[in-house]
Image (cartoon, rainbow, N blue to C red; front, side, top):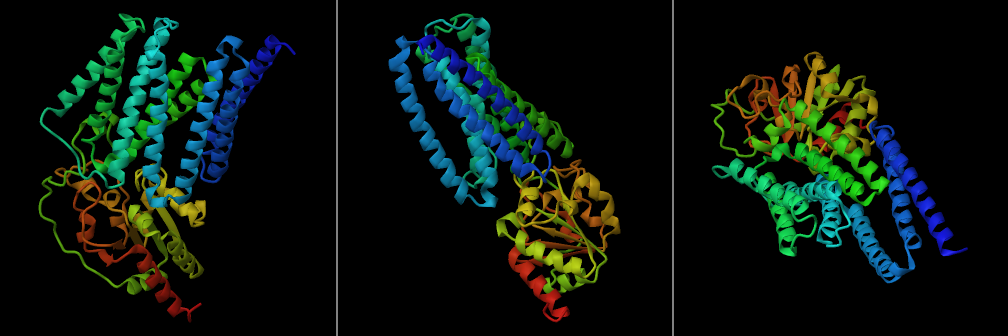
Length: 481
């Protein structure tokens, strides 16, 4: 078989593989939309990525003999990079705790954006002039978005991991950020329109450095309570960057995967911002959350502690109990003990449901994944809009590790920085128990009015230890069974 036929067959296999990978990406994402099929959806999308990666190595058979030295070197480098990446992802993925999953997602978002920026850098540093104006502009835009996603995601990771605490705000910061952004964009467009891709190395390097700095400046002022929205936004950025660079490389798998991730991330970002009753611009450019110095006025009432066993017994004799989980549940890794307690209540005839706030935890779907890991049935896990009307019928609402998402100040206190954010209506239950390690404020730095209400009692302690005490108390009523 001659070289021409070999190259033709390789090109055909590549095209078919990329089409198959694109289908698997889309089908996998569709299955991820339901908790019941999410796990298989991830496997399907992963298979699509495997097909795309393997097909990429067939490019060695679709280029001319003149490029042989370069393709041999590239295959070796690609294989080494693949081995390093797989090894790191496998070991880190195996070891990561559920509480650190948001950090891992932020880190992977950044890596995707960095990969897209790296592709753009290779194209922009070339001086062959092989790209026309439109591909050059797309390369610049994709590189800009990818670099911002890389540095911004790394800052988000550092905030979530506790390596950077609080926020960084200075007077005129929005003007500084705007100046950085438009200067970076103008430099990139100058490279495309004026230099036509033949810009000096220092100019292209300056473009990427400015883009990386802007990503840091953009993320540093954002409060910790907004991190779920920020992670979703950078996920969308990464998808857009990959899609743009796929257009430049004429790679359909990258184009489709990028568009799917970008559109899904954008929709999720908009839905999460809506769930907080705020715009995405308000999340990025406002001074919400984590400052901890807002004036809220004096809190009426006092925090009233109660023994965990007494709270458990009270729930055992309730007719309806609604559980509002939060990040503290993940920190304590108490989801398995919580479900054990839930099964005891159900055996006693108690109607038990879970109420999930859209931004509970540190990333979208964090609580759903946590509960699914413990085996909690999907039919008792309810979204906020579906469960909020039932709190007034509940005998007991128990809050485990949640804070800002159950703060009544969002409904009633116009001076509160979270005013207007939809919350779970746990305060409307007849009795509220709050499982909490101490009397600290929430992730946004806002005092929680729920803790001071007459119908609220505080159950202090690590969530897992508290659940063990509740289980023991309930079992003692039933003769230890």
